[in-house]
Image (cartoon, rainbow, N blue to C red; front, side, top):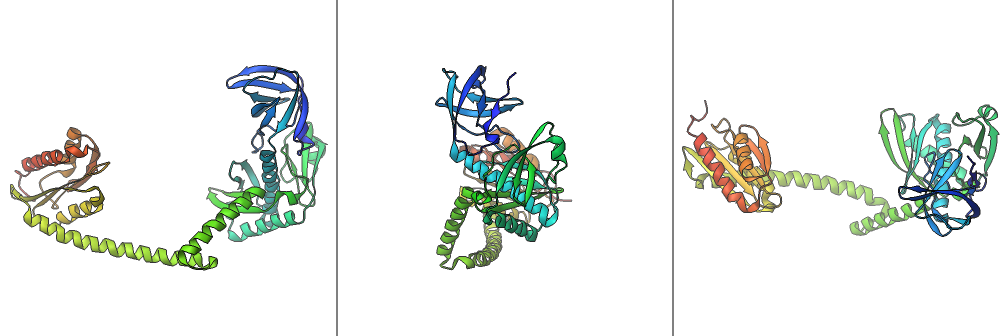
Amino acid sequence: MTKTERLYYTDGYLREFEARVLRSEPAPNGFKVYLDRTAFYPASGGQPTDSGTIAGIQVLEAVDEGDEIAHILRQAPEAEGVRGRIDWARRFDHMQQHTGQHVLSAAFERIGSYKTVSFHLGEESSTIDLDSDRLGSRQLEEAEDAANQVVFENRAVRISFQAAGEASRLELRKPTSREGEVRLVEVEGFDLSACGGTHVSRTGAIGLILVRKVERMKGLTRVEFMCGGRAHRQARRDFRVLSEAARLFSAALDTVPELIAKQSQELREGIRGREKLLARLAEYQARELWQAAPVIDGRRVVRQVFLAEESAQAKMLAHALAKLPLAVALLGVKGKPTALFFAQTLGGPSEMGSILKQTVTKFGGKGGGGRDFAQGGGLEESRLEEALAYAQALVAGASEAEFGS
């Protein structure tokens, strides 16, 4: 088996190259095309595959198969000699994110000996997992500041190759288990790592390193970050959102968080006040409905259908009716889905959960509950009245038993 010469190992900035097709093989989504040399990076080490064209045919994926790299194409090239073209925008973005990860990981190790245990380069953002769940905002800011300082200093990023034995004696940020020749990526005076990925030649090309989100897991901290063009675009989006919020508040940008907190508190208080008023209103409405309800076998049965927007009110009414003596509430709510709320005075003779289950079994839907309150729905809106009448018949049968004990 031949070996594919990996041109990206020595020149990450190579955008086009000439190569010879060694062979092509059918693949599930096209063909596997093997070249004697390639600049296409295959997905590896947390970095996604390159894209681009070979002989004008779109490269769907580059796959590392050990000594060889398979290029997945829709069709096989006809000529033996081909030209490959890298999707440079995608490649350079990956170079910014990957070199930025090296710098950020080294910064975390320097400020608190936090080691990176995994790295993922995503379409929108990237993440590193650190071996501690005890990082606070101070450590995160210190690492971000240290990483960006390295960017501002525009330090050289050098690629070299060493025998595995020699590489193991160097001060690598993370020990390597590779055998044979090891590819090393050095950020001048800051980081030295074994890595096969593509990288910028100087740290200035990384652009801004921006920590976006932190998620603490058992024993780990996941840090989401963006570099370069991604960070620039995200900062612009953030500014637009903040500016719009400031416009809506008629306030300065830096006062928006305080105003949001204040209005959120006022909104919570308003919601609590509204809920109290609605509960009081439900009590009055429940008494009116109770007084007007027919007495069936010694109990006042309130049977009523509400509009879709009255669902919360209907539920409150069911609970309020249950507080009145000798009461049964059989309430339905229109909409998609429909809703049912069945309730009775505490200790009544009916089993409301059973009545609701029998009702939805006959008319469709689902639901359940306890002895004195049950809820469900999902039946056809056109059958609500019929379903409530059926439930009332079940209640009438149950009410022959002695009320309470």
